Length: 124
Image 1: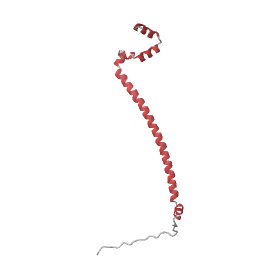
Image 2: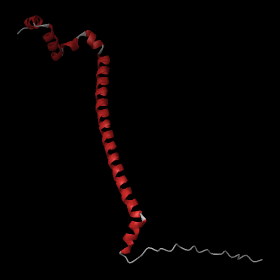
Image 3: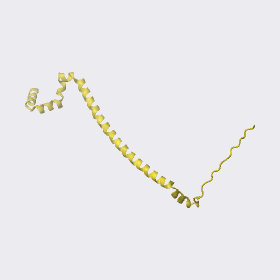
Image 4: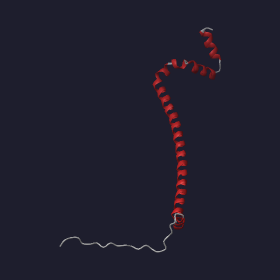
């Protein structure tokens, strides 16, 4: 087709189809007002890319935060159960039962405090 008939065919199409055709063919880039504003268009595209990448970054950070909170809850529950077991083992009755099989018995007599007298070793 010749150029004139091609332009006539494009003009006969609905306006939406014409706009899409201009957009896909790249003809809108040859217009003077578009070329004058190319730095601004590049700036807008760069800002859009930064905004999209920030969205992905924020989503990844939130997922990591949620995972960290779940790990923290799990660690706290393990710590609580370990402390409960330790307190049970530290009880006097459990301690006496655990040393009984070694042949040791719990003393019923209170301990005696031995005091050492200090001597004055200085010569007079």
